[in-house]
Amino acid sequence: VMDAPALPDALCHDPVLSRCMMIASPGNNQMLPRQGARGFPHWGRWMEAHGTCDSPVIHYFATPVSSMTPSVVEKCAQFMSGQADLFSSPHHSFPGNLATRRPMQYSISEIDGYAWTSTDSLISTAASAARAAMIADGVDSCLVTSDSLTRAILTTVIFSSGTPCIPQEAIHNDIDTFVGECLTCRPVLSNLLDGASHRSWHAADGTTSHASWDAMNTHVIGRLLTNESGSMYIVLNPEYHPVDISLPPVPGTWHQIVDSYSGDVQPAGMPVATPTQTIAAKSVRVFTASATV
Image (cartoon, rainbow, N blue to C red; front, side, top):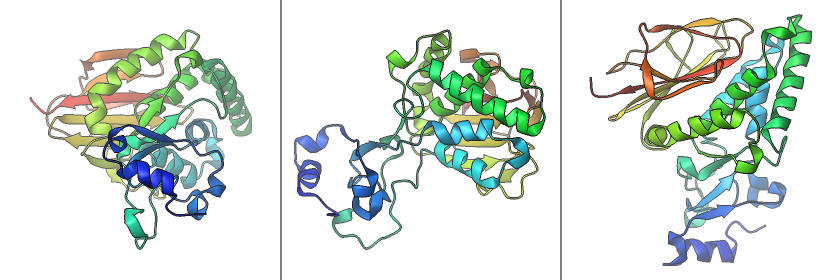
């Protein structure tokens, strides 16, 4: 299998076509160079659907807490980072600039066509997985509704780095309003999620953590992104009970824009009164702060 197929190479370097948006959709990753370790040969120009969108997030929220491993948390965190290392090559000696990293937004999070084809089937998939996890943990299955769990999964997908891809035909129930409101908020945060920003991971108490998560006493994920325009903080709680978290200090005032548990979306933001916030069971909350005080 060629490292640099002639036609994609020519497209990437053509003075006219190279300015077009190019999207790769391999039919079989095992037929790609290095068995798809760095995705479709891209020269830093091809976007690509990574095809692993919903499973790490569903596993994170629906794995029995009693058997949750750092690997489950780490894979969800990797997804949130736009699969930044999924299409990068560990080999730096490839000719022709073949090991160039893709821009963050070139990783497409395609959330249909794999485990589910609509939000109805996502709800069914998530509910079945969560029900099995609750039975395994000996927890009352009434604690979490399938709709709230689905909103948590969709919120994670939409507010992760990369390009979320949610076909309109996949949304045909009451959740479509929630998805539409979240997608309205997403472009405002694109410079943080997909542009140049400082990124760090945080434990529930606000302290900086490492993405290995081995030392964490809970499985809560907090991700902070900051640049000169402001800050964004997204918190995921996979536990069966509410968890108190501490918002990390940043310039400006934190505002909540999304609460997946209640389905509340505030594009303009709702100021939070205290840095200590309670994150409901199996839910996600998104906060933003402007750099101007």
